Amino acid sequence: MKKLNIILVTLFAIIGAILIYKFTVSDKNNNSSVTKITNEYTMLGENNVFKYESIDLIANTLSNGTGIIFFCIPENEWCNYYAKYLNDVAVENKIDEILYLNIKQDRQYNTSGYRKIINTLKNYLYKNDEGNKSIFVPNLIFVKNGNISSFNNDTCFMDNNLTPENYYTIEKINEFKETLTNYVIKYKEEL
Image (cartoon, one colour):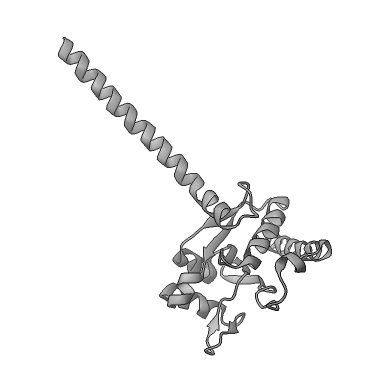
Protein backbone atom coordinates (compact mmCIF):
# COMPACT_ATOMS: atom_id res chain seq x y z
CA MET A 1 0.00 0.00 0.00
CA LYS A 2 2.86 2.32 0.82
CA LYS A 3 4.38 1.65 -2.63
CA LEU A 4 1.07 2.49 -4.32
CA ASN A 5 0.85 5.80 -2.43
CA ILE A 6 4.38 6.71 -3.49
CA ILE A 7 3.61 5.84 -7.11
CA LEU A 8 0.37 7.88 -7.04
CA VAL A 9 2.06 10.89 -5.43
CA THR A 10 4.88 10.70 -8.00
CA LEU A 11 2.39 10.35 -10.85
CA PHE A 12 0.36 13.36 -9.65
CA ALA A 13 3.54 15.39 -9.21
CA ILE A 14 4.63 14.60 -12.78
CA ILE A 15 1.19 15.45 -14.18
CA GLY A 16 1.12 18.66 -12.15
CA ALA A 17 4.57 19.65 -13.40
CA ILE A 18 3.54 18.97 -17.01
CA LEU A 19 0.38 21.09 -16.63
CA ILE A 20 2.25 23.95 -14.98
CA TYR A 21 4.88 23.85 -17.76
CA LYS A 22 2.25 23.71 -20.49
CA PHE A 23 0.30 26.71 -19.21
CA THR A 24 3.42 28.72 -18.42
CA VAL A 25 4.96 28.18 -21.87
CA SER A 26 1.61 28.84 -23.59
CA ASP A 27 1.21 32.12 -21.72
CA LYS A 28 4.77 33.16 -22.54
CA ASN A 29 4.22 32.40 -26.23
CA ASN A 30 1.09 34.53 -26.30
CA ASN A 31 2.96 37.49 -24.85
CA SER A 32 6.33 36.95 -26.55
CA SER A 33 5.47 39.00 -29.64
CA VAL A 34 4.30 41.95 -27.53
CA THR A 35 7.32 41.69 -25.24
CA LYS A 36 9.76 41.39 -28.13
CA ILE A 37 8.41 44.41 -30.00
CA THR A 38 8.21 46.42 -26.76
CA ASN A 39 11.88 45.68 -26.16
CA GLU A 40 12.81 46.62 -29.73
CA TYR A 41 10.69 49.77 -29.94
CA THR A 42 11.19 51.51 -26.63
CA MET A 43 8.49 54.14 -27.17
CA LEU A 44 5.82 51.41 -27.30
CA GLY A 45 4.14 50.11 -24.21
CA GLU A 46 2.74 46.66 -23.54
CA ASN A 47 -0.59 47.78 -24.98
CA ASN A 48 0.36 47.53 -28.62
CA VAL A 49 -1.26 45.93 -31.64
CA PHE A 50 1.83 44.67 -33.46
CA LYS A 51 2.13 40.99 -34.26
CA TYR A 52 5.35 39.47 -35.55
CA GLU A 53 4.75 37.45 -38.69
CA SER A 54 6.87 35.47 -41.09
CA ILE A 55 7.90 36.95 -44.40
CA ASP A 56 5.97 34.21 -46.20
CA LEU A 57 2.70 35.04 -44.43
CA ILE A 58 3.21 38.74 -45.15
CA ALA A 59 4.03 38.03 -48.80
CA ASN A 60 0.83 35.98 -49.07
CA THR A 61 -1.21 38.71 -47.37
CA LEU A 62 0.12 41.26 -49.86
CA SER A 63 -0.68 38.97 -52.77
CA ASN A 64 -4.22 37.97 -51.86
CA GLY A 65 -4.97 38.73 -48.22
CA THR A 66 -6.26 41.53 -46.05
CA GLY A 67 -4.40 43.36 -43.31
CA ILE A 68 -2.22 46.21 -42.19
CA ILE A 69 1.48 45.54 -42.64
CA PHE A 70 4.35 47.41 -41.04
CA PHE A 71 7.93 46.93 -42.23
CA CYS A 72 10.61 48.41 -40.02
CA ILE A 73 14.02 47.87 -38.45
CA PRO A 74 14.43 48.40 -34.69
CA GLU A 75 17.83 50.09 -35.08
CA ASN A 76 16.24 52.83 -37.21
CA GLU A 77 15.21 55.61 -34.84
CA TRP A 78 12.53 56.83 -37.29
CA CYS A 79 10.85 53.42 -36.90
CA ASN A 80 10.58 53.86 -33.13
CA TYR A 81 8.63 57.10 -33.51
CA TYR A 82 6.55 55.78 -36.42
CA ALA A 83 5.62 52.64 -34.45
CA LYS A 84 4.56 54.74 -31.45
CA TYR A 85 2.29 57.06 -33.41
CA LEU A 86 0.93 54.23 -35.58
CA ASN A 87 0.06 52.25 -32.46
CA ASP A 88 -1.67 55.30 -30.93
CA VAL A 89 -3.84 55.66 -34.04
CA ALA A 90 -4.56 51.92 -34.20
CA VAL A 91 -5.66 51.77 -30.56
CA GLU A 92 -7.79 54.92 -30.92
CA ASN A 93 -9.48 53.43 -34.01
CA LYS A 94 -9.96 49.94 -32.57
CA ILE A 95 -7.52 48.17 -34.88
CA ASP A 96 -6.70 44.87 -33.18
CA GLU A 97 -3.67 43.84 -35.16
CA ILE A 98 -0.92 45.16 -37.39
CA LEU A 99 1.32 42.57 -38.98
CA TYR A 100 4.96 43.41 -38.35
CA LEU A 101 8.18 42.30 -39.99
CA ASN A 102 11.71 43.37 -39.21
CA ILE A 103 12.80 43.49 -42.86
CA LYS A 104 16.53 43.96 -42.21
CA GLN A 105 17.84 40.43 -42.81
CA ASP A 106 15.47 39.54 -45.61
CA ARG A 107 16.45 42.73 -47.41
CA GLN A 108 20.16 42.21 -46.72
CA TYR A 109 20.15 38.61 -48.01
CA ASN A 110 17.55 39.20 -50.73
CA THR A 111 15.54 36.16 -49.64
CA SER A 112 12.92 34.57 -51.85
CA GLY A 113 10.16 35.99 -49.61
CA TYR A 114 11.68 39.44 -49.93
CA ARG A 115 11.85 39.14 -53.71
CA LYS A 116 8.21 38.08 -53.78
CA ILE A 117 7.24 41.15 -51.76
CA ILE A 118 9.34 43.40 -54.00
CA ASN A 119 7.57 42.01 -57.04
CA THR A 120 4.17 42.65 -55.46
CA LEU A 121 5.07 46.20 -54.39
CA LYS A 122 7.23 47.17 -57.39
CA ASN A 123 4.97 50.09 -58.37
CA TYR A 124 5.31 51.64 -54.89
CA LEU A 125 9.01 51.23 -54.18
CA TYR A 126 12.13 53.29 -54.79
CA LYS A 127 15.44 51.97 -56.12
CA ASN A 128 18.45 51.49 -53.86
CA ASP A 129 22.01 52.56 -54.69
CA GLU A 130 22.46 49.45 -56.86
CA GLY A 131 19.40 50.36 -58.95
CA ASN A 132 17.15 47.64 -57.50
CA LYS A 133 13.69 48.19 -56.03
CA SER A 134 13.91 48.01 -52.26
CA ILE A 135 11.77 48.35 -49.14
CA PHE A 136 12.89 51.42 -47.24
CA VAL A 137 11.65 51.92 -43.69
CA PRO A 138 9.46 52.84 -41.99
CA ASN A 139 6.93 51.42 -44.42
CA LEU A 140 3.19 50.92 -43.86
CA ILE A 141 0.78 49.15 -46.17
CA PHE A 142 -2.98 48.64 -46.01
CA VAL A 143 -4.15 45.76 -48.19
CA LYS A 144 -7.57 44.22 -48.86
CA ASN A 145 -7.91 41.01 -50.86
CA GLY A 146 -4.47 41.57 -52.33
CA ASN A 147 -5.20 45.16 -53.38
CA ILE A 148 -3.21 47.94 -51.76
CA SER A 149 -5.47 50.72 -50.54
CA SER A 150 -2.84 52.86 -48.82
CA PHE A 151 0.95 52.94 -48.76
CA ASN A 152 3.14 55.18 -46.64
CA ASN A 153 6.90 55.50 -46.42
CA ASP A 154 7.03 59.29 -46.13
CA THR A 155 9.75 59.40 -43.47
CA CYS A 156 12.09 56.80 -44.96
CA PHE A 157 14.27 59.40 -46.72
CA MET A 158 14.61 62.13 -44.15
CA ASP A 159 17.64 64.41 -44.21
CA ASN A 160 20.55 62.94 -42.23
CA ASN A 161 20.80 66.12 -40.15
CA LEU A 162 17.16 65.88 -39.09
CA THR A 163 16.30 63.61 -36.20
CA PRO A 164 12.81 62.30 -35.49
CA GLU A 165 13.01 64.01 -32.13
CA ASN A 166 13.37 67.37 -33.90
CA TYR A 167 11.03 66.56 -36.77
CA TYR A 168 8.03 65.42 -34.76
CA THR A 169 6.73 68.66 -33.31
CA ILE A 170 3.21 68.68 -31.87
CA GLU A 171 1.98 69.98 -35.22
CA LYS A 172 3.81 67.25 -37.19
CA ILE A 173 2.59 64.54 -34.82
CA ASN A 174 -1.02 65.68 -35.22
CA GLU A 175 -0.63 65.91 -38.99
CA PHE A 176 0.95 62.45 -39.15
CA LYS A 177 -1.72 60.90 -36.94
CA GLU A 178 -4.42 62.50 -39.08
CA THR A 179 -2.88 60.94 -42.20
CA LEU A 180 -2.74 57.54 -40.53
CA THR A 181 -6.30 57.92 -39.26
CA ASN A 182 -7.49 58.63 -42.80
CA TYR A 183 -5.76 55.44 -43.98
CA VAL A 184 -7.47 53.48 -41.19
CA ILE A 185 -10.88 54.94 -41.98
CA LYS A 186 -10.48 54.12 -45.68
CA TYR A 187 -9.30 50.61 -44.80
CA LYS A 188 -12.23 49.96 -42.43
CA GLU A 189 -14.73 51.24 -45.00
CA GLU A 190 -13.38 48.74 -47.53
CA LEU A 191 -13.76 45.76 -45.17
